Length: 290
Image (tube, rainbow, N blue to C red):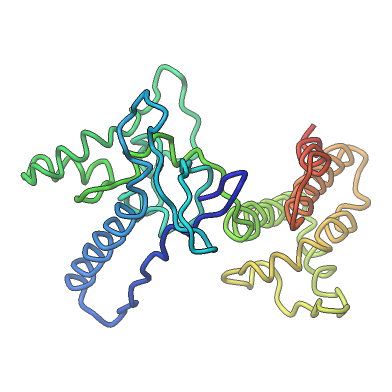
């Protein structure tokens, strides 16, 4: 948890052993145990943040052991969250690849939903009641909402954890937005018959400092990691610009817009990589999208 004054390490979350050679029934039981242990650790660590609202001045204050060996009387406020995709789902006690905010079916994720057809917001108090009931109908309801049984401490924190900033370049940008950008570029080049040129330029990039030549095109790579995306971001604008040169005059406007879009997102990413920020750098990050 981070404040304007200090960083407090609450706990190191347990990382379970990966048992890939177990039968599926054993894996399911082990994953259920892992989720219970994870939520028990979170419940103990986040207990000062889950106190009921009190109008007194001492509300949600606690004594924190500091690095100098003394205790400070602090009010802890959760301002950011950081977790991998699978860990994020386990923390919220949800199944993988579902919405943290509403009960949207998996096959509708990313689709536009009119305001009058919005899916219901997640009711974690209801989930807890159904979990405690442990009846066939209650378990079926939890299953239809993609929710695991058990106690989850996150909904009892006085904030919406899913809306908190996630200062994680690896998962939000490098294998998040940049990975989506590369997929979009691939389909854009294919649609405008520039894919062969794009792959040829990409594979012809020479070695320079810590950059090594690529020996596979995008279609031949099964999965890109953060290190690969970090290096690719340094020359992706140039490769895309050269790939979209020429063509008919009718293609120029959309190709120019595509280059501008790629440049804007990568500029935002480059600013985000700064080790520290001030008002000027934060304003520059916001101005990239204006």
